[in-house]
Image (cartoon, rainbow, N blue to C red):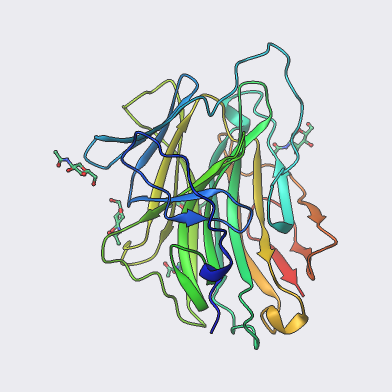
Length: 300
Ligand SMILES: *[C@@H]1O[C@H](CO)[C@@H](O)[C@H](O)[C@H]1NC(C)=O
Ligand SMILES: *[C@@H]1O[C@H](CO)[C@@H](O)[C@H](O)[C@H]1NC(C)=O
Ligand SMILES: *[C@@H]1O[C@H](CO)[C@@H](O)[C@H](O)[C@H]1NC(C)=O
Ligand SMILES: *[C@@H]1O[C@H](CO)[C@@H](O)[C@H](O)[C@H]1NC(C)=O
Ligand SMILES: *[C@@H]1O[C@H](CO)[C@@H](O)[C@H](O)[C@H]1NC(C)=O
C-alpha cells in the first residue's frame, strides 16, 4: 500500500535554530510541524511564536507577518493555497464588536470511506481565515477530518486534527497532537467542532481563537491562536490532493450540519457564498442557509 508519505518530496530543510523540526511536508510543499496539544500560537510583532502549554517558547518563526503598508487590501476571499479546494464561506465585516466572530460551530458524521485508495488526501474542514495587518489573508485556523495520510498521521481511514497553516513566503503548518492521542475516528461517528473567540490573559490586546472538537470526553486536540487582526472569513469546505476518480471520494455527500455562526451581536442575517476549484471532482451546496443550523454539503 502506498501511503502519502512516499509522495512527500525529500527536499532538505534549511536548518533552523529552533526546537521544532519539520516532520515532513504537505503535498504543496509546506513544512509540517507537530506541537503539543493545546499549544498557544501567538503573533509577537512580525513573528509567530509557539508556546507549549507550560508557557515555554518552543519555536519562533521570524517575519511571518508582513510590515504594515498603511493600505488596506479589501480581500475577503477565502484564499487557500496549495491543495485544490471546494468551499462555502461567509466574509465577516468586523466593523465593530457586534459583527466580529464569537463562535463557529458545526457537526459532521464520519462518512463511509472512499472505495479506492490511491494515496489521495482529503481534508474536510471548518476554518477561519486570518488576515495580516494589511487585510491580506495570512493563515487559516481549522479543525478537520482527514482521509489519507500525511507525514503526521493517517492512511486509508479517517482521522481528526486541529491545525494552523500560514501562507506568506513558503508558509508552514502546525498540528496539535496530544501525547498518546489516537486520531482515528469510526465511520458513523458524529463529531462537533468549534472555533471560538476566547479571553486570554497572555496578551489581551490580541484576538484569541481556540479551535477544537467537543464531545462528552473533551479528549480531542485543541490549538489556540492570538493575532492582531480579527478573523475575516468563516469557511466550510474540502481540500484534496490526488483524488482522480469518483471512487476516491466518499460514496455519499459529506454534510456539515448544525452549523452556527455566532457574532458579538448574536446570529446575523447572512447567506453563504460558494466557490469550487474546477480541478476538484466535487462541488458544494448550501442546503439550509443562514447563521443558525445551516447545512452545507460537499458533493462528488
Ligand atoms: C515545557 O514543555 C516543553 C514542551 O512540551 C518541554 O520540552 C519542557 O521540558 C517543559 N518545561 C518544563 C519546565 O516543564
Ligand atoms: C456584512 O455587511 C453586509 C452589508 O451590511 C450584510 O449584508 C452582511 O450580512 C454582513 N455580514 C456579516 C457576516 O455580518
Ligand atoms: C459553540 O461551541 C462552544 C464550544 O466551543 C459552545 O460553548 C457554544 O455554546 C457553542 N455555540 C453554539 C451557538 O452552539
Ligand atoms: C454535538 O452538538 C449537538 C448540538 O449542540 C448536540 O446535540 C450533540 O449532543 C453534540 N454531540 C456530541 C458528541 O457532543
Ligand atoms: C487537549 O487539551 C485540552 C485542553 O487542555 C484537553 O481538554 C484535552 O483533553 C486534551 N486532549 C488530549 C487528548 O490530551
